[in-house]
Image (cartoon, rainbow, N blue to C red; front, side, top):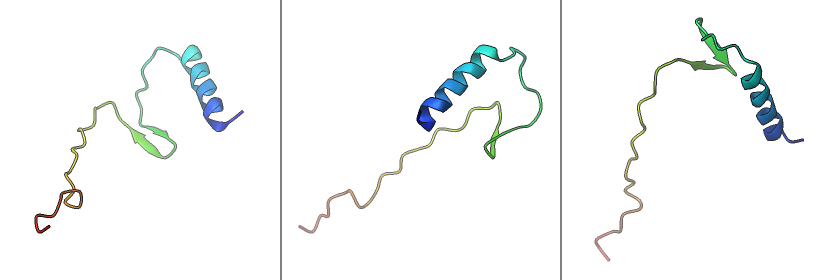
Length: 56
């Protein structure tokens, strides 16, 4: 069993057996802060390296 499949099975088990009550306190998972708000979308920045040089 790989770590990926173990994590998938663990998540399935938690979702099947979890309470439907929302969490109300500060939650830390693997050192990450998880809040209820959505993140701002990341904008793609156009790279200057990919553009062709006009001197050729």
